[in-house]
Length: 135
Image (cartoon, rainbow, N blue to C red):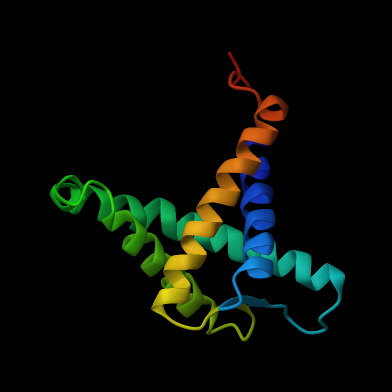
């Protein structure tokens, strides 16, 4: 359970840093747009992104496995960009959440998000540890 919350926090922080770096990717907090609402919005968007990436992303990776091999994995950039656009579409119904200005911004945002999430996960790996499961 600790690993889930650390991963959720990691993704939320990576999403926040991504919105600071990539101008075409923004997060709109729910009203009132104070600090608490902004943090909760980032956590909700990170949770939705994790669910979409875990369910739909894995399904796409399994079905498109030959295409991944054919393109030497470069198709993953497009798939991750589409998944980020899907999260933006899903959160658009709520009035708050992720906003992506286009497919190019989605791909760039997904690349930056993946790199930042990877770097943060390396930094917090000693906190979580590899053997935190109950024995």
